[in-house]
Length: 251
Ligand SMILES: *[C@@H]1O[C@H](CO)[C@@H](O)[C@H](O)[C@H]1NC(C)=O
Ligand SMILES: *[C@@H]1O[C@H](CO)[C@@H](O)[C@H](O)[C@H]1NC(C)=O
Ligand SMILES: *[C@@H]1O[C@H](CO)[C@@H](O)[C@H](O)[C@H]1NC(C)=O
Ligand SMILES: *[C@@H]1O[C@H](CO)[C@@H](O)[C@H](O)[C@H]1NC(C)=O
Image (cartoon, rainbow, N blue to C red; front, side, top):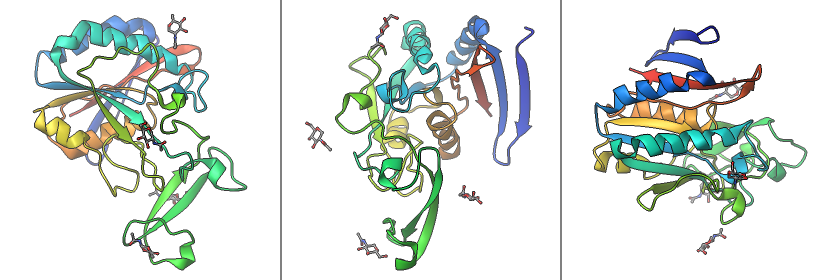
């Protein structure tokens, strides 16, 4: 395992072990998954595998398409062990506040601050309102717009009629990386109550992108409840021509 390495660090609220494998160690990952799945009532959360984040999309993740066969493979092999499969879907207004196109003179990846008043509505001008909340917003190209093919799930992604879809980011004035809460923490989706009502104790998370929506969904899942013992996220990127995936074990 020459190109596998292990890093660990302590966080204030949880301990995270991050293991990065070269893609060829995928079978090891699968056997680990098999060990874990013998345990509890499990949900598989598939985050934002949508055309906008896939090749040809306006906010395409490097090699993002490669998560599709992996996710399909996991479903094929472990479907019976998941009591719930949830797909999250980024679902933005065409004039969403996170789009650089809505901020004249700005460009994608620029970070701006958004201000919200006591009633959690956006202050158009900071000076014109009693600021209660401030949110750092990275600006993005227009993406995943409601009712467009850009927002559709990847055509090759395995889907079943029993899958639940959780939409997020539909508030035009605040972004939402996590499938649980928007970035201001103002409103929540129905995901948490769905997990609770389904008696879920363990959540696996996979999807796009590992540094934003998969990451924030995972952290919120840990913070929300004791039902989370393990979170596994996929991360694939073209660092040094290797395909990597990440396993975060939250204990
Ligand atoms: C929220 O507060 C702002 C002023 O801070 C006001 O302009 C706006 O109408 C309020 N919105 C609601 C829904 O109460
Ligand atoms: C927002 O960005 C500023 C400046 O980069 C930084 O100091 C601050 O900690 C950030 N706030 C949050 C909540 O991330
Ligand atoms: C999206 O399509 C649905 C169903 O056709 C419709 O009810 C809804 O108003 C549309 N939303 C937007 C923002 O176009
Ligand atoms: C689905 O996968 C096939 C085979 O890998 C590929 O040729 C095709 O372009 C994919 N379709 C989509 C919509 O990604």
